[in-house]
Length: 503
Ligand SMILES: *Cc1c(COP(=O)(O)O)cnc(C)c1O
Image 1 (cartoon, rainbow, N blue to C red):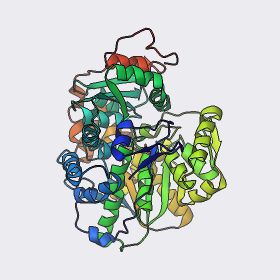
Image 2 (image 1 turned 180 degrees about the horizontal axis):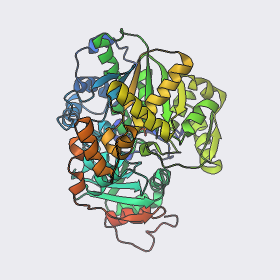
Image 3 (image 1 turned 180 degrees about the vertical axis):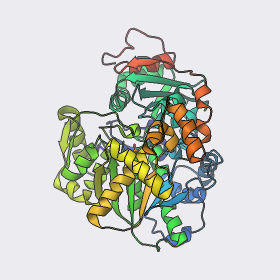
Image 4 (image 1 turned 60 degrees about the vertical axis):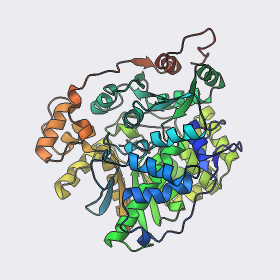
């Protein structure tokens, strides 16, 4: 399997090389040259556990790894770090099936990919005979940061550096990151939002000058963001696993359609669903759910992507994003793999802050439904679902449920739906407490206590005792000083030419 750039430069990489590099030389994202079409009979997947399904899917994309290497990665990633023995329980509530993707160490779906990425990367480094330390730069809207820190903490040959929007994540998300242990972990708050962090990180990736400085100091850059293909591929697994479970339970027959609803920010999770569809998963509609930052809703409805709009900090902070990186990959596939066209659109975004897709792409977007939920609607949804079904949604999953309900009411389409449940409600305890009508007093940590007492739902292990852990990472930096922070973290001396003009 060869990986190419979405921007059409013709660069070709193996899966190990693409995972190490993270982003292509032309600043495009790596995409598989061909998406495998294995011709599933989902009845054959009946009875397989999560690890077994992963062992079936991953080798189709990661062809440079041996079977035993992938088995090693899978069995170490999806072990008892996951508090649910099933790894991904499929739970019915109301008229939807929730794929609970948040039973990993950091209580968000980012663990699904970031539990395995360090193993994939470590093996890739060995196979490619890389003799440098890998410096992993990560911009986070709140959940990727902690999952990446947890995954890479004290992994030999790596340094992990995380930038999060200061004041733009929940108190619990922030505390998870700032208390991270591990000699190779580095966390910085930035005075800006997620887009500022992601754009600055991408700029560092794009700079030959910076690459040279790092190389001279013994470092090679990589990414733990969903721009890395090593994050996207493991996410394909759970869609296929969940569908097979519905077949196994007799909820659907092999080959029946499902709808898939995903609370969306950087477009990584829903893109993995699209890959599963291209592999043969019978999906009728992809329901792309946004919060008040509804740029994807507008895009799906009009074909115009316009970032000249106000940015809102909401109660679903992991989706507070205006530049959804992985949409670039979808544009590539929907345009008939037209790298020139994608390159043109991305240049327009940079220069004009907007782009308009051509008719082919617009027509091919018809499998996607875009909708959004405002903050009040999100809380109302959590309250309603909890009262009616005793099922507790986090703010992000609630956005997806609300948008799915709107879709179902409008379309009368009652195809069974799989909803990606992306976080534990405890991560956003202040909002959850409010939503289910408890008298909220005090900060996020008090709310955790209150929530635990009144719902009896088990607190994820990773969040227990968080309040009393020592804060290790306290630095907050300007949004144009990321490279200085990288140098500080990696203990690179300032030489005359090392402060690149733009950084
Ligand atoms: C990251 C995240 C999302 C958005 O996922 P994308 O892959 O960025 O679209 C949704 N919900 C939660 C809880 C997240 O952490």
